[in-house]
Length: 193
Image 1 (cartoon, rainbow, N blue to C red):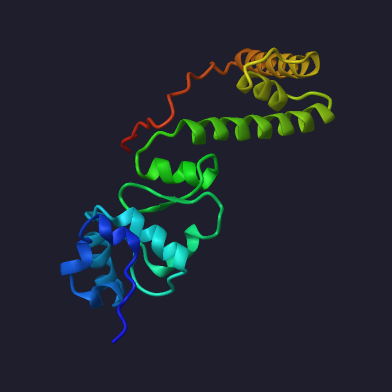
Image 2 (spheres, rainbow, N blue to C red):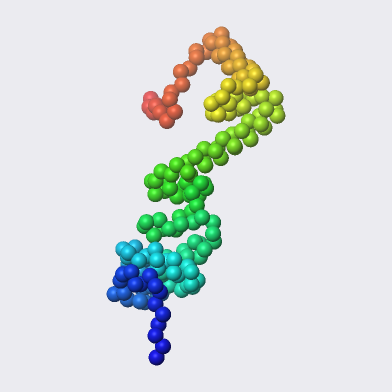
């Protein structure tokens, strides 16, 4: 009878799966979810996962991850496993930021990268507004970028404001009072008499 070659990491302790039903680790999705819970509390989980990845293990739950989850890690795109056994995306990407938000986490890397993406997009849109000769939207983009508006966009904003003042004055001259707008989200119910 040939002895089984056990992975070296098993010398460092007893695996959590040693007393669990082996079928859990190769069974249905529900059984594998139970197996993943067993792995989550195991002190050898990281070593087990590394061994499974090194060997290219194609079946079952190893190190708290299913075959599909392990294949995501092998893609080499910066994915990682968090302390709760979840495969996470590389930080600095929009999907990673969305995952952090879903888990109510803060990540400086993802937030900084998102701020940079937003600024690049705003600058791209501002160039398009400048190509039109400067616009009110261009003025708003300058404000969002927290910078002084260029003369063309400032002029467009001034024209828009002057037109609005003129329209209000004309309404008032025709006998229509300037109507105070209610804040958004508030509505008054009118009772029919």
